[in-house]
Image 1 (cartoon, rainbow, N blue to C red):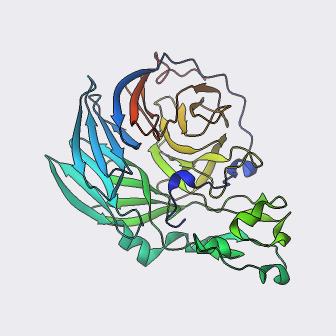
Image 2: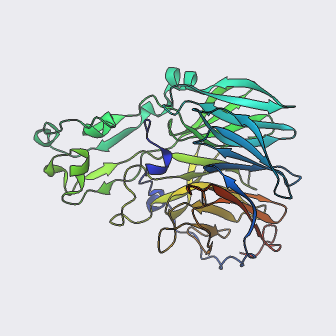
Length: 374
């Protein structure tokens, strides 16, 4: 993934196609009614919640990191106009966040403590030297040489103008979580889960290319593809958007399909889990539309923010009960971008793309976050 906004990307990560079908799971218990805690939050695409209920919200496009107290009062913690701030995560009194340019050439992990920010790791430097997803090949794999010769280029994103390409140098840290002394990062540009410990960056896992989507006639013209690609499979980038620790000790990751999220292909966002020790990747659930974030409750229930989910594409939070491989319930909220579970409450940033600013919404879970019911 290059410099395109994460919100305009998609990735046909149809990982569940290769997964074993999970045993049937009961529908998720219904949560309470959503309540607005704060409003006027610019582009609130990232969220972390402390044990005391204080929320940290990243205003990605505005270059803001804000705090929201339990009464809805807001404060500016970091302001970097013209830059992007993303992927907040909390460890005790320290708030970690990503800061960098919108072109993804400069990106660093910072730690905010006692009002002072300190650079922890150079994520762009790591990507430039390691480029973890260089092991992946995206695009077409079964075109004839005659068809491949007809590609003429696509200036907005050059790799799309090629019949196939390997992972390019690009970093876009989009979601993060802290486990013990390690910060785990879902890097949507690197297509990888990274770990930062004592300032050292390493790759935990590289998400594989998507299962191929079959290109319908005429679809490829928007990218300048020749007509001969119709009927052939295209593998898109996986685009991980968030990472959270599950009760089983695995890291749970949302994947936003790369390319078009077209009705012709259906909702293709997924949740996978990653073994933090070995990097093993296991499919968990699929069928999400605009999967930009997730939260995992103590009982294993997964909440997925679908920015463009629901029958009208206006957004929803999908509930995946323990043992299920697709949504077993939904919470109807507009344009949810990020979610977090804390003390039997689900925090959601909603109306995330509204020109008037988004909201921090809180939904009572009524005991279901710790319940062992499916």
